[in-house]
Structure formats: structure tokens, C-alpha cells
Image 1 (cartoon, rainbow, N blue to C red):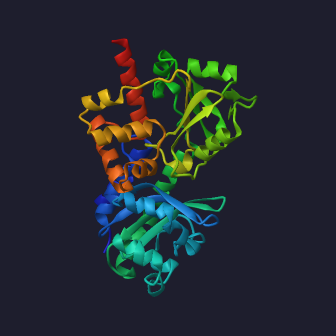
Image 2 (cartoon, one colour):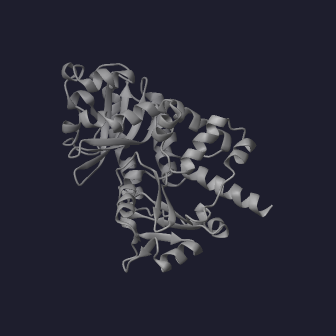
Image 3 (tube, rainbow, N blue to C red):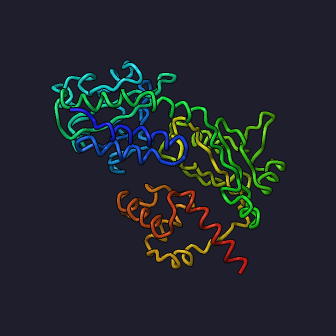
Length: 367
């Protein structure tokens, strides 16, 4: 059994489409899943020293599966020790990492893996400072002899994937303040700073630059690094800038009477492993908060009362867990309702939702 040449050629074409902006990793993973029995695939990192890992781009796995992996099961992944010493750019079977008779006795298999597959294949794409970035697919059934063809196809694809990895490692991908509506924020008296790897200032709106020059809540050092004028707030910025932190994405802080909203931007076209996080710092006076007509906006999009409350919570810096506790509902319910908010408003992330609200507020004030 072999993978048909036209199917293989389609996979190669999609990899180069990703490089040139004509396709996405989601498309590549989807096409790959079509050839693997019951296939579900993820591009993920693992840090053996910290016993942590997370899926960055995946196709076929549920949100709950992805979240539970980073929250707990990455720390007990029985494949990880052997995976860390496997040669790069060679597809391997999970049975090469751990004999199946041992694997099926683990908590990882019984409480986690068997809900999506019986076995797996993978390949190491990057090893850096003890961390790994891999591609891995779950497979519904079949023995090693049946699944070797898929591992070997990974190996055949390796030179093309290698070029894609090198491209993304070398890329910049910085965003400007204008993409966040920098001029919009200025128009309503709100500053915005875009902060990148190591706290480096990437861009600033006019009001943001004024805040930096005043130094009351934020300042810029001689190396171009942004500092918050409070030790705890600065530590929070550092946590959000951590490349491997996947849970915390937004915080609202009061620094010397100035309201700072820190939003960790979601990555889309680029892989997070090669692109350090960017943080948007939104600056507004605590004494003169910018009020938002969220119920009015929600009505225009047909949001339910529950969905409006979720949007209000997110805009005030609450996490999904916070909203679930406050409303006495499960995180899964809140997550489902948030997906409905995204669908109705036409956005894909919390940062896009924030921008939508500010754009709508500007239009309301100008009318």
C-alpha cells in the first residue's frame, strides 16, 4: 500500500501554498487527514524539561481535547521521553516510542488518547533548547505494518516541510498599530502600544506615544523596551509575553490611575512556535473610562442576553473560567456561547471582538 502520487503532489502543493500565502496550515492538515484512517493531526510543541506542551494548529481534534492536553496530559505523555531523542525529519510510529502493550496500560491512553485513536505517527520538525516542535497524527486502527506507509510519507514530505519551517523561522510578521485601529483609538482618547518579543515596542498610536513620553503608566527604556510603572503589572506583561503560555490572554490593570488593558494577540497565518507573542496595551484614563454600548451593539447582531454578558465580561478582562463561575455555568457552555458570538459578529478571536466594539463605538459617537 502506498499513497497515490496525485495525493502526494497535492500535499506538496499545499505546503508551498502555505509559504506563498495561497493556502493555510489548516488546509494542509485537512488534506493529510483525508488519507489517514480516522486521522486527526496537530502541529504542537513539547518541553520535556518542564513537562508541558500544547497544540498550536490542529485539525480534527475537539477544543476540549486540545485544552485538556495542555492542561494535564502533556505532562504525562508517555511518548515524550523517546520522542525527544528521535532523529528529526524522519516519520516514526508510536510503537517505536513505546511498545503498545505498555502504552495501553497508561492513564494517557485510557483517559485521553483512545477517544481519538488507537495509535499514532509523528515527525520532529524542530528541536531548540530542549523543546520540540512536531507534527503528529492519531490513527483509528491498524498495526505498525499498515501504518508505516503514513510515517514514510511524512519522511517523503520532510524536505518540503523543512523549507516551510525555515521560512517561518526567518519571517518577521510584525503588525502595525493601524491594524488594531490605532487611529480609531486616538480618536476616542485611547492609546495603543504593540509590544513584541522581550517587551520590544513594535508600534504606537499618537496617544500611546504621548503616554510613553509622560511615563505615568508606561515608559520606554533606551533599548526600546516597554515597562509598566508597577512591578506587579510589569510581571503580568512578562507572563503574557511568555512564548509558551497558552491560557492567559487578557488582563485589565490600574497603574497610577490609568487603565491598561493587555491583550495577547492570536496568531493566524503564522505558527506560534516561530513567532513570539505580540501584546496590545490599550491605555485609557481610569477617571474617564470609555463606556461602550455593548447591549446596543449586541442587539444589532442578534446576540442573546447571555451572549451579551459574555462579551461584556471579555471586554472587562474576565476569562472564560471567570465568566463560567460568575454565571454558574460550565466552561463548555460559555465556550459554546462565545463561538456563537464570534459567528454572529463575524470575528475569529477576542482581540477582533474588542476592535469591533471600539469601531462601533466610534461610529455611534460620530452620529
